[in-house]
Image: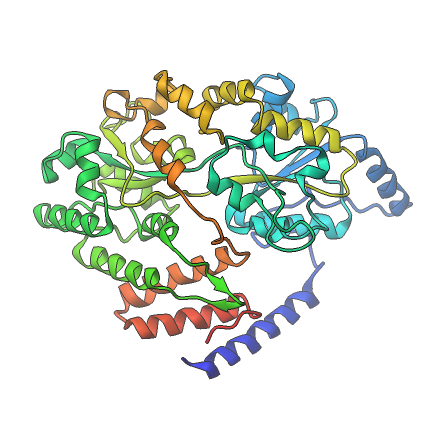
Length: 481
């Protein structure tokens, strides 16, 4: 491997870090250029320090919840407080909910960690906050920023029916809380493969989700199906939406952690993924679009893309746009099956600041969202949400619950889209596979495979070398040889 290149990359990284430190405090904007006034204390010329101290003292009487957007936290608060879902976002924005202050950072999940760090460094009030799966361990393993839930008086018995992978991510792996539950999620973000049923019948001859699952139930089968579709459609229809979507599923099949003994691990699944991605890329089995772009969603509307990797939260999110919305040309034409491998995509964990002055409120909100089965059942239907309780979800699914008419209407015969993912949710296993570096390393690997292996035609060894260079840049403390 190119050790010299990695050494130079490390030097460059340290130089950039020094420049960054020197420029801190120049303005009040975050790295994404968005105004961060919701988390930055106002400057006061006369008696500013005293006024700020008074403000912090007043905040001790208010339960402060922080998240990067208002997609979930407000509704969990409304469920806990018995308030209207219809007005809760506006009521929280206007501080109309008695005893609760919600900080909406209005940013992407990946930007939230930087803003949380800013809040902690500024000594701002924060009681309970939300962490995303890829970087949750940064806080879960830091006992100065989070506390074990048992110290709130919440025992493991409260979470007897949560899905195992959410349990694994929520437990600290380092520090004084190692082995203890620190974070807890109210949702299970199991994924599946949603596809145009009419196109699947046209090109693959399948007439049901069960038949489709048989066609794509392994990665070898998935590639074979994609090649058939591409050939018959003259590369006009791709089976898969993006390499990004493919990677969301494939990465969950990894059997070793990304880092062992402080060394980056490139295991056999990495090469398997690269070969799968390349095969799909070359035959036209996956679109050349990037996730989160207009083109990504438009491919579903136009029919240039037959299927999307989607998780439980995505059906009412980006997937609704990809089918053209309610009443659109492709609305009602889809089905969903498990896909080549059980996987999850995303998910959020609630954690509590050990310096919180409102631990009773934090405990009450957590129990309402993650342990109270009646509340969780109600929330699953009202939100709708695939809640993190297998007993609750099994009961709802068995009774043919319609979780949301608009979302269900996307599927042929109003297929129960949560039922299709129930087995995946139970099969996901991430025990001993979570590391604090997963977000940076997964992103770097995916980028290199796309740009080097698929687009530039680099060899596997060259691709690995480039990935390790990027890993050294992203996480300089790790061993990459």
